[in-house]
Amino acid sequence: MADEPQLQRSRTEGIPRWKLILWAAIAIYAVIFLLVNSGREDVNFVFFTVKTRQIWLILISMALGAALASILPRWWRSRDR
Image (cartoon, rainbow, N blue to C red; front, side, top):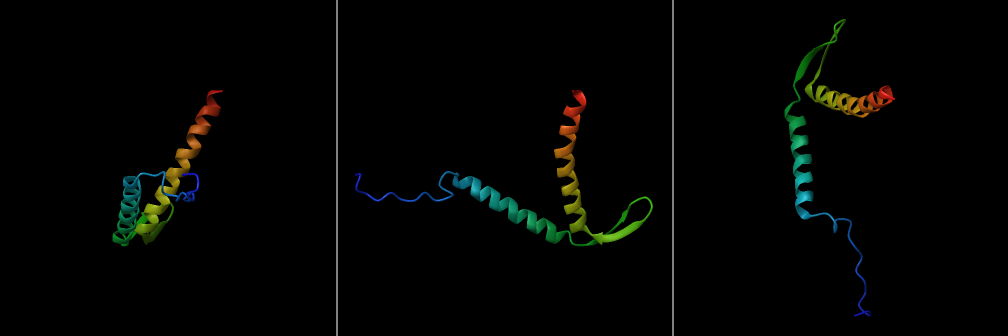
């Protein structure tokens, strides 16, 4: 059996197939969600108002949420020291 050529491992060999299917479904859903929400909305920033597409509102909100989720725990831990 030592004479058999060793097969190269594929990148997805260690990942269960259902996880790949789940991530693909989430990605497809996210793209459809963004495309369906392409209407324009007014956003009031207290001192001025901007009319922009819902796609940008969603993406900016996600980016702000990710930034706050990353920064606030670090700030809170440093404050406790």
